[in-house]
Image (cartoon, rainbow, N blue to C red):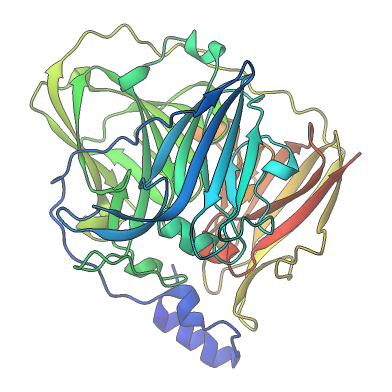
Length: 472
Ligand SMILES: [Cu+2]
């Protein structure tokens, strides 16, 4: 990662005049308060309750407003929330049954809500310029025609998405289906979503947001609480890891480096479970793992480590405390869900991600996002290969591209096939500095304008976003 000194050096060498101060993009180095790790129980966001259910649709009504949350024990923090909850309530959807959510914006600023990973009509996608202004409301309709997946909803108004998500506007959305249920995976209380993120919080509980200030965000939260402990039974759990951080990547492993099974990715189940001892989780990504705690005696405490952290507060994510024995009739079958056949690619595109030091913005193909411009004209029903290049070697900056509307397949990274959770359906993929990734993607089902952008939200907020228009 780039440090401040490198950047100052670069800026001096390039003689660049930044429209957006670079120290605001790249951040500084101070740290937040030290809070004792594992002092708080894991919080599991409540299930959202529909206000009405018709024959076809579950209706939800959600206020978007400022509220207080207890992030540091005994301290109230001002946050932005969906219905006062940090993070938002978890929406449970069933494949084939529509969900309609009306968001009422009671904040002073505009917002947009995007359901990340969802296959939805453009009018409900949460385009970054499709604003819900202060005092207004908007209903989004989600058809839930895609396979079961760990989706999430979050703020997406252009320029303010990074700060609004940072301040709390994010929640999880679990789409279930019968095919998945029939597999016998752990379910109910043994199926647990875990939203990981970092924050820069001062001793008074104030969330400090500086665009690009990732180096100062040295407190890790899981479902809104600092480094919690989670009391588990000695049995299998399905854990759905979400990376809701603006910029931080995680390399997660158990303290004893024992193995577990990866079963899912952004867009749902992998074709088959993959045994692993660690996995990487980049902003916007989801990884599902089944961990079997039955191999541990009651009384065991097992820390989940982030090997990309550099101090204790960013290395220790949470702790599993095995507190009781349990029966377990769940299983992880050898076959989960075959990958969808995306067809034969007929179009090849290239996309380049880069920091533009002259303009002080992150750009795609040399351009800052402009909603009036269409960057990719796409014919409905085509299968394409996109080669995504990350040109940021000096300074060295990772990026991770997210495409709205679709789930794609990652063909290779720097010419080598990918594995692990990247063998499943994906909507967000990381591209290392100087590297390239090829994806295969089919544009089907919906026409209209959608965006693709870096999911390091501090990057997209400056303009690292493009627009694709899908037409018949
Ligand atoms: Cu980026």
